[in-house]
Every structure is written in structure tokens, then in C-alpha cells.
Length: 331
Image 1: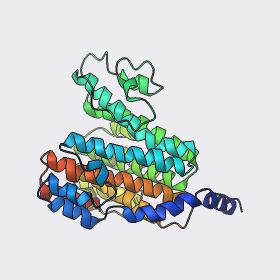
Image 2 (image 1 turned 30 degrees about the vertical axis):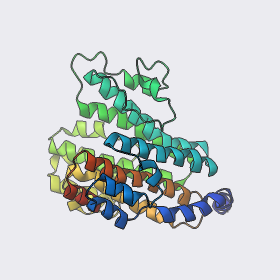
Image 3 (image 1 turned 90 degrees about the vertical axis):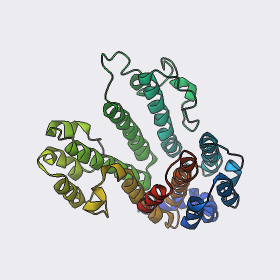
């Protein structure tokens, strides 16, 4: 009874937003457009193709990869400022979409400190924390940002990049999981756990490839994911890579996946993208509630990732066929 009441309340609350989504999702870029962008001989032709789409106005004047980044960020800023505001989403949901950008800024600031460069131009303006707060001592930053920003300042030897990334990822996923739980939206909880499981599967396979001791396997795993997957940490060091991949598949933590999908660790992000895309597609088909609204926002974010590769990546010299392979594997 309580679940039915909640569903009715959500259908009423998000009714206007779902109606907008049903119109807007028809404007999402589809594979034929991505293929045309990939086959375009130059930036001029890519801009001509994009002029026919909803992102055209953000990229009509771009001339460099940096311009493309700014244009795509502006498209996301409008999505967050206009669509999310009009959708009347709870604060926890809005925060969920801001958190990755805050941690991307933290990651950029920490790496800049470690190599001794100024972080100018590295920050996104899409987070909840002003980008300038990550410059200097970070005294105005909330926890855990302030601690992580300066965590390696006094290290006698430069930290391993993997250790830095692991510490930031741990804080990022903890924040995402907390916001997802506070939102009380099943889709966000499921997607966050799925992303944690993908990250943990990647960590297990990388640790095995480096022949790390079992104790280090467990230390590197992110909390909040599948217990069955985390349970492999105690035995992973005794398995071969193929055996470990089979064991990961058998946990069913990642859903529909085959062991050969895990063979190339460097392409693991594409596997994760595909799994998330499959879950979003199911959410977009929900008749009402928050799921179609959130699935649309997530689809727009995924669209930006693809455009960044197709347009900015091409300008940066990425091989066309390599991009085509990545698109196919992303699903």
C-alpha cells in the first residue's frame, strides 16, 4: 500500500517533467548522427551536421578542442539550470548530478599540485563548489575535499597515481551512494551500485595482473557494492586472469556480461558505459515517476561524452577507426 501511494505521489510530482522528457528525448542524438560525425572529413562538416541538432548552437563557433569542451559544458549547464530546476527534483537528486563535477575538479587540482603547475583552465563550472575554492590551500572547502586536496603535500616521495585515484574514487562513490540513498530513487541507487561493481571488477583484474597480495586486493575495493564481488578479494590472487574473469561473471553483479568482455582491462570503462546504458534504457521506458526524468539527464550526459570523443577527440588527433571501435563497444 505504501509503495503504491509513493508511486502515485511521484507520478503527480513528476508528471510535468515526464511530459517534457517525452518531447525532449526525441531530440537525443542517435547512432546515424554519430556515424555521420565520425565520417565527416573535418570540423566544418561536423558543425554543419550538428547545426541540425539541439547541440548545434553550443558548437557553431568552435575552432579548437578547448572550444568544444566549453560548448559542451555550456550545454550541460543549461540542462542542469533549466531542466533540473523546472523538474522540481529533490535537492539530493540535483546534488547527485553535481558531485562528479566537484570530484573532477578535486582530481584536477590534486594532479596540478603534484606536478607543480597552475590548474587554470582545468576546472568545470558544473559542480556545487566554486572552482576557485580548489586553488591554494583549499581552506574554504568542505570535508573531505579539503583533506584530500592537501593529503600528499608533505609526502617525502611522490605518491603513486593509482593511490591518489583510489582515494578520490573512494570519496566520490561514498558521496554518490549517500546522495542516491537520500534521494530514495531506486534508479540512482542501482546505477551507483552498478558503477561501484564495475570499478571493483576493474580493480580486481588490475590487482591480479600486477600480482598483488590478497590483502591489497581487499584494501583497494570500494565499499557499497556487491558482497559477492567483494568476496572474491580473498581468493583472487590465487586465480589466473581468465579464471578471475569467469568468477566475476558468475557473481552476476554486473548483469549480462561475458568473461571475454573483461579480457582487456584498458577497455573496461566501455563495458561499464554499456551496462549503465542498458539500465538507463529500461528506466526511460517507465510510464512515470522520477526514473524517466533521471534517465533523460543521464542520457544527455552520455551524449556529451560521445560528442567529446567525436569532435574534440578528432581535433586532438584521435584515429577515426579507433573511435569507431570505442563507439561500437560502448553500445
